Image (cartoon, rainbow, N blue to C red; front, side):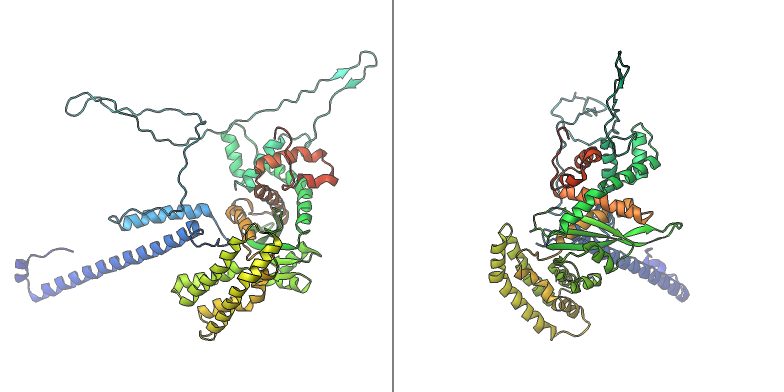
Length: 515
C-alpha cells in the first residue's frame, strides 16, 4: 500500500480524493484476501500434516493398531510430510521449527564394517583474518551413505567327459536340475528378481535398468520369462499352503482393489486381491493371496470350498452368503472403533469419546491376556471383559434413543449395535481374536507395491503375483529372509518329491547348508 503525505491531500480536489480512496480500499481488500487465503492454506496444511502424522506415527499413541486398507503408500506419506512442512515454513518463516514426532525413528549409525572413503575439506587458508596461523583442534565428522552398483558373478559348471579306452564308453556327470532347464539364471538370480519385484516393488523395467548399470544387459522379456517359469514352479507350494490354512477353524479374510489391464485395451478395470490367514492363536504364521477379476462373494466361497469355521472379516456384503453355509461370522472391533474415532476427530463428540474409552478398556484386557492358554483366556474374557461389554452395549442402546436419525453419531452407534453379536463372539471362544487387524497387516505390502507390480496384463499375471506374494509374505512372517528362502526352494524344487512338498513351506522350511 502506497503512503500518501498529508500535505499532498490538501492539493487534491474531490475527484482525486475519491479516486485515491477507491485505490486504497481496493489495495486493502486485496491484502485482506491474501491474508485470508494464507490463513486458510495454513489451516489446511496444518490439518493435513496432523492427519498424516497421526497415520504415520500415531498408532502407538492411540493404543490400538488401526487397520490398513485401500491405498496405503508409506513412502508417499513420508514425502508428503516433508513437502507440507516446507510449505508451512514458507508461510510462517518466523514460526518455531517443527518438533519431530516422538515415534519418528532416529537415524542409526552406519555399520562400522562398511568401507570408508575419506574426503577432507581443508580451509582456503591456514591463516586467520588477523594474520595468525591457525592451529588444529579436532575433526568434526559427518557420514553419508553411498552406493556402488552390484557385481555379477559367473558359475562355471565344468563337467569332464570320460572315456573307457577299452570299450570306448563315454561317461559324463549330469547337469544339476534347474527350474528353467538350460536357462541363463541361477536360482539365486531368479530369487533376486522375484524378491525385487514382489517384496521391494521394483517392476521389471526398473530391474532391467539396474542390471544394465551393473554391467550386464538382460532383456525385460527374459526377466519376464524367469518370473513366469518361477510362478508356475511355485504353484504347488501355494496350493499346499492354502490347504494348511484351511485346516484351521479360525480364519481372517480381507480384500483390496488392484488394477487389471484389459487384453487388447489400454484401459484398466478394478480387480481384487484377497488375503486369508489363520488366527494369531492358531499357531500358524502364513498368508495366502488370491487374485480375482471382481469382488463378488463367490470368489471367497470358491476359496473356502467346503471349509467351515469362524471367519473374522469386515461387514462387506460379499461374505454374507458364507454365513448361510456353515461359516460363523466374527466381527472386527477395530472397524467399530474406527467409526467413533472418525466421529470424534470431526466433531469432538462426547458420545464418541465415551465409546472410544469403553472399547479401549476391552482392548486393554486383551493385551493382558496375551500368552495365556486357550482356557485361561476364555475364563478371563468371561469374568472381566464380558461385564464391560454388556455395560457398553446397554449404554449404546440408551444413547441411540437420544440422537436423531441420519446423524453421524447415529450411524456410528448403528454400526456396532447391528453387528453386536458378531462383534462380541470372541468373548465366548478363546481362539477368536477381537479384531481383523492381523489380516489387514498382510494387505499392507499389496497396497504399497500394487502400482509397481500388479498393473496386471492378464488374470494369469495377477494369479502369479498372488502366488509369489503368498510365499514372500509367509517367509517374512516366519522370520526368514525371502531371498534366502526362495533361492533354496528354487534350488530344491526340481528334484524334491511332490509328496513331501510340505517340507518347503515357509513355516517348516529348514535351509540347506550354505543357504
